[in-house]
Length: 147
Image (cartoon, rainbow, N blue to C red; front, side, top):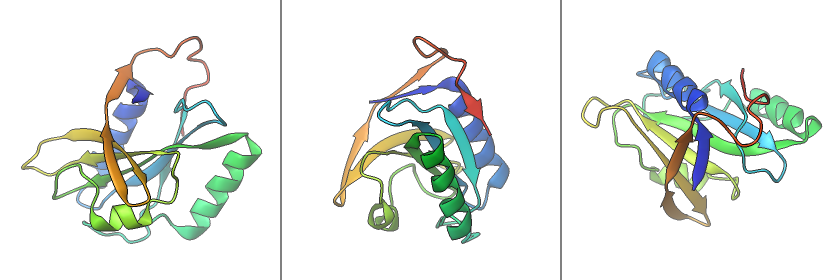
């Protein structure tokens, strides 16, 4: 189960709606071993595509180095689907390279309405998981950041 603060969900939704019809993408970092999403980092979709996302390689390298320096890891990797439901595409599954991460997909497709779903993707196996959206983390919300 993914437990995530409502402000982070709102920030992902706002980014997805702002970037529509281009797929948006980003990462939410958290302290190593905590599995607690804390710092949202919007990323550029280098593909500039309506049906595919790709992190800009230079930006990704910089973000991953920064997370390492801060003692963080990618807790959530998110992107939007602009014309399909919030479910991993074949390409999403092939490119899933962080086995410990929650893969969140936001659908901004008119047919499905706005929806947010989370998945674990390991060795090409997709498992949907529940999302628990909270207004406060226990015990400390002070570390929550939206970049």
